[in-house]
Image (tube, rainbow, N blue to C red; front, side, top):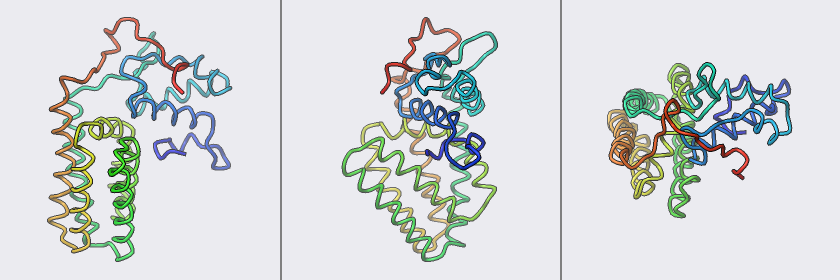
Length: 245
């Protein structure tokens, strides 16, 4: 099950419930760009796709709307939410501050085994970057960030950053798709791991802030070429649920 799935959507036995499966599928579609801003998310079609009633489909859409991926306004069909550049900037500025603090905590508290686990996570980044696998790199980067949060051992940082996970993953995937980003990001993460290994908290914090803000800069430069449909004004957005495999 993908880490983006809300734990409240798990069945009693710990397995993914129909709600969790739908949340995971729709979230991945939005994050990886198969579902675009303004696309309808019809609960009937989702229910048919997953072989369930409309109730879990509607519950999944509610969870996604709470996470900011779906716009479900009163008396309107649920749609993939639009992305606002002002919100993007604010989210990335907050992430830069938080990951700087995460890096300071790692440099101070991480064990040698913890540092080794971060190097292993970076090795996976290097492997998929060499293959030019954008989606593979994105999810490997998510795993690297998860490992940082585990290693820093600060529950509050993890709670805050996890609360932003779905919304930020959508933006992070956009950054990853831009030309040259995989190689630069991989090199930046190598320098970050080197700073962790040297227990240089100030350098690691500066590098981590720079990694986050460089992704923001890449998104800002590409923004005029991005299509962010406003669900309130878009005309007859097409339903992609049944066409996506």
